[in-house]
Length: 410
Ligand code: SF4
Ligand code: SF4
Image: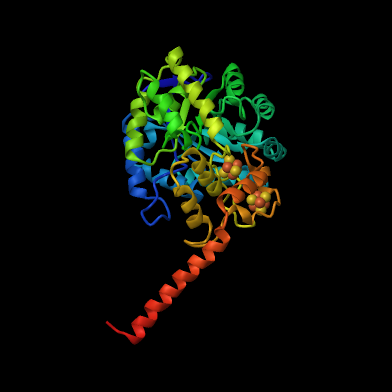
């Protein structure tokens, strides 16, 4: 494992951080598989990872609880712990203290090493400032409940710079990957923060998993031409780590094989170590993805829930898959199954009532309403007719079985 220093403090952090937003799920599909998650976290720590990032919003509060358990048995002292203040839960200065004190209890610790204001926008930052958040952070540092203050954001570059300049932050957290050089804070924001001596933690290095595979044929052909062989995820991580301004790259790991691979990739990911040829290869992949991808949705789910019941990221994900893998027809079938009501409730794009609520919450600033219209047009042709017929068929089969059970017992 390689380590990079936090500019203002000299604290040495592993370049690979464990993001606790996507912990492994139970086989039943509901809730975290806690024993497996704890094994994974401790394995990563035993192999050099010393930065763990969580938030009250992750897994509906269960992520912090799980970390509290995972860091027992001496593991707390081996790591720097990062968690966040959720602006949407704060109505007063007292709320801030109450939330932080609750987090300390849940995480079973007497201090948070890296404490962030979660997903700041210009508006949420103004709201928090009016309630005294900057005084709160300074007080919490002074009384030892937190060591360093920072913020995470998906805001655009001007808002990002304003937030950077508003306080003596130790660090910030931004979305960054080879598709997002000019999106949100982007490369200019990364360099700006670094220029102000902030450590920069990176989220979404795989853009919601999209860059980690499976890879479209056209993209794979480009990777295959490179004399250096890497998995798509390793290429994406190496590109981010190639920037010396980056301190930690967070990966939402939940699979043993991915953890192993990421640890291996992090072992020699020195800054400015990619060759000109490798950078050209990544650039060509970037252009191809932008050409193939229909909607730049990262699956963050900040737009949810939709009052009309649309599963916005779910619809976009299958729509993108439908275009990225044109030979594979399964995306359309999955769309029918998951969103058309065949396997439960309906959540398809055509339900959108165009209220606009989701667009205000989307950190990617996507024109969600218009894109959902495209999804509906392309993915739902005939679906609303076919689904009732299929459901009717299933209902009849079910009834027939029951009748058989009554009149023709085995
Ligand atoms: S605009 Fe459509 S998708 Fe977005 S929240 Fe409103 S109804 Fe839901
Ligand atoms: S539409 Fe926007 S807010 Fe919703 S999941 Fe996608 S990127 Fe996130």
